[in-house]
Length: 145
Length: 145
DNA sequence: GGATTATAGTTGACAAAAGCAACTTTATTT
DNA sequence: AAATAAAGTTGCTTTTGTCAACTATAATCC
Image 1 (tube, rainbow over the protein chains, first blue to last red):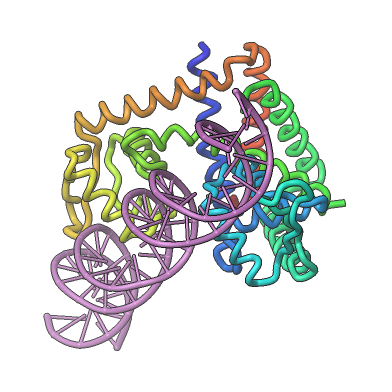
Image 2 (cartoon, chains in turn brown, blue, orange, green):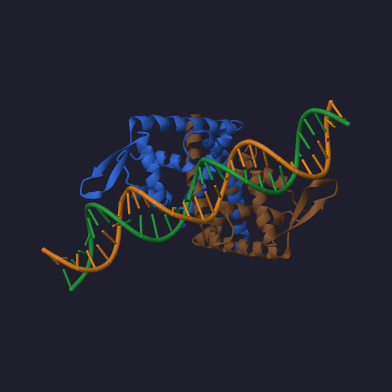
């Protein structure tokens, strides 16, 4: 029955919500919230610059909320603004040197923490885990998610 | 390299955070928050009753926060309290008839919404998806997650 | 068995995270 | 040129979550 499949998938979602929750716990001790970290992450992988709009669409953020986060980032000199050529309303945002450093620190911590939690796994299991993850991504890519 | 595996796993986590986020969006239109829904869910699968402490451990909630949520639930007559035999400090909590009904509604909506998002998938893909999910659960069960 | 310590849950005060709507400025459409 | 739309900001509010102090009961330990 289709409902059973869905129920199982929802069960996995509940389970994985907890997994992600545990992995995210350590953000609580850092200077960045989860959302701020995601913004930093996106800035890092987009060295060509991003606009506020890009973030709003990518991370589904409220524009007022985002605006304030970016203001903070600016105050802390984590980002740099560059006005867009033909549109004076928006800016391209980049990580500054300080920002790159901060992100790198953040990223490393998160990497280490994940590594530690997964340390009981043998290499073979880790490879299997990643295969499953890629399988899920591939299947879900056919939906509207 | 181990770091590469970890990086891939973290990448999946970011991806799946979005998936869960999309699936959870519809809670915004209901009378229950995500946390409240999780509490209702747990109450539903534990007809033998649960104490506040159980929730705190299971869902990692602050006890003050939980206390207030449960007060609300009581006011709405969604739950019933029964004092524990040999401990006057705690209560066993159950869904009331009203609560069961409310949960059932909630559950059905969530089921339908998930079903809709996954509707492009053929049965075979859904089975494969669930296999991957079970694979992940099984592997992660060997860690401290 | 009485003092001490621990646990369950409540309450008050507060902070962080997020959402909403009105607004300004610049672009686009008609 | 006027009307409409879009990008981002600001003020205000709500929701969500945290922390510490407190009450009442239970468990532990001389």
